[in-house]
Length: 421
Image (cartoon, rainbow, N blue to C red):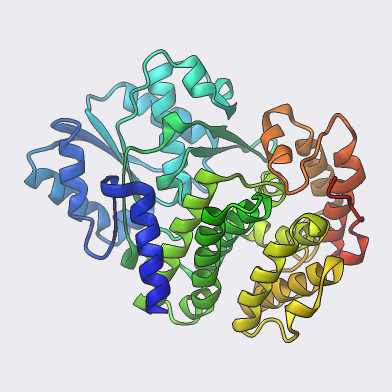
């Protein structure tokens, strides 16, 4: 396992270079990173950083480098509600700063990304949903954000994504743009010992989803396979231990590496069906848990196009004791259903639901998911699928809707057959 961790570390350095401080004892780098932008900084901080002294350590680092902290603002609520984005944009607008330090999990960092965009570029948040809209609409791309992660989960500190939720419609929408990648990032993995069991579980599932969805959609891309396999292996091997032993530093370190590799994966490939579906479940499920439930079903749907990936994923779950059969002897849909069963066993082991109905979803959620799949601003998710789909051609009704209904009922036999062509 040490060799696997070293491989993960090397991959992350390859990914981010000197712009990312990760691992042990790296919070002190905060001052050095901020100094590169100037002598004034504001901080956006989640509750974890305040409660467990992380915020104080970062302020001390800034002050040692002669940086004036001109404001400390509350982070975002779960799922980054748009109201929190507007509040933060206003607070940034009335403050003087050279850099913004965002300290928290994915919700706070995503909201910070969007708030900096609004403060610097104007308009309303809806202007920027979709792909490349920040670059297209913003005249001056100034984005001095230092993202300091406190949870092994979304890897928001490393990526071009910002997920923002409209609480009224309970629908999450996505900003995708290279311009919003934080130029500097920090993640000291041992701070995640403060993550509660629920967040630990959901964060690990989010990391697996990033790796697996990108890997499913890749076409013999060796780098994606290397990144995704390493990330999934680390998370599947260590997530149950981190849940059972919250203070286990080895497990926490492995989860940090694994979820960071999920961030690497989504920067070189795209997520697809499960992520798309999760955007419509924010009122009942976290993003990670929603993806964890949905991915086994979409794994079966896309079986004809992902036979190689299925065998490799199946080996990982078999090595960890979640599949008894030798996956090498299976092919086609039988292989996919065998791997899906292993994924279900893993979910059961970490006490996660295995169907949407079990998780509290209703038929209204199914309808909402189908409607969202037809949203033109989420078109990239259909195109990223292992078998690309088109709402205009009826693929959502023909294939996605039955797969979503299967996930709702917890019955993979409801998933339709689909041609890879």
